[in-house]
Length: 457
Image (cartoon, rainbow, N blue to C red; front, top):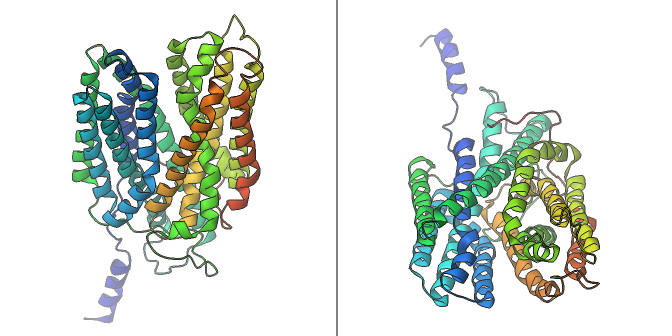
């Protein structure tokens, strides 16, 4: 072959791109949306069905709901570890099938033991699904951006600061969009469930099972079969030598501390289900106002998550995380101050609205940023177990926190000098987290590229 011909062939070889192994971001966002629709079309009405259709008492209902939450959040660490070992595709398909089994068992249940077992199985299905999805979101954002920005003929492995910033920006962007899609599911799911409830709770359960069956088929057809590769982060620097192994997250004191403080976010969010009905009864707005408050929270998140995420990326995690927990603390503090006096007669729902506003704004600040920081903690290792530990810490905080709050809520059903107690405790927990969580942020935190637009639609 002539030298000129060889020179003509060489550029073609260097410009060949690797085959894309990550699922499309649109598929991941749609998965988050549909997963929440299927979940919220069923679970919010479980307590109503157990009470009205089967005559179960408050204690039995509380145990079933608490067991479901703990089975899901508490098992996230193991679900994440399985996602790292099996691959996200198999873990997500298995999670859908397990949740289908849980829904079918709930449809068959007529007494407390079967309701308990069915609820636990549905929780385990979520524990298998969610860490794998979060891991894929991080992988798609990081690897997708690195493919886009890498020159076609580049053989240099060291990434520039600009490329790291672009990739980190995509991570928080995609997680923010996942939150928005999830909130749309939170709105649509209960609306669908309320319509199906007119034909019986079993219809809602069957519809939910059908949703997850379709998801399992979609994942089987369209998710890559290869094991997802660990994503690179800015923590992959020469002076950073992370420990290896599937359970390496348990050996990192900084990440364990971060997970412990971040768990207060899930405890705060859980009060929308546990504490908010108490406040609505105290104010006289009634439990029927719960749907209005939930819709307000979802609309707030859908409309503001995008711009809030952009602002927090510019500010950085050392500002975003303390600010988010401070907003949550203020939401609880406002309710603590108003709980001791009768609610405004013209707007009894006002205290609940103030609480939900603080919780929603705080959640918008901290969740996308924290999800991106997990990649920095993982430092190129499989991320499923890291996301799992973060959620499991939240599940443990919910169990312990709700146990401590339960007797205090008994004092908060009527305006009195003792009604402020649970809300003050929650406010103090939020303020403490806002003060100390910045100490556990990775030394090479996620920083956003200012002025960039969201890539995915």
